[in-house]
Length: 91
Image 1: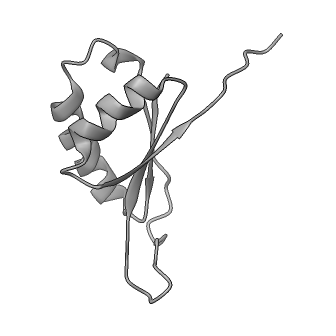
Image 2: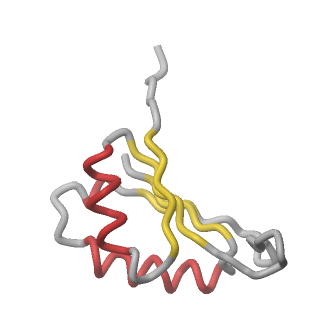
């Protein structure tokens, strides 16, 4: 399941961004598998070495192809970081 995580955005900004992202990716055949992680910490920030705010969306998925498709669709909305992950179900 591709996962979107939001860093440096308030809860309200995250909710707004999720709505915009869904509009961009809603036609992808795997969109129903996507989950969004909303952190309830309104005062978190991502800052550069020089103190500039730099929020971004991190996409985690097992598929480099899906990561690329998702990045392409939402890059106009936010800075994006992709991470290819391993997944090991409970045995």
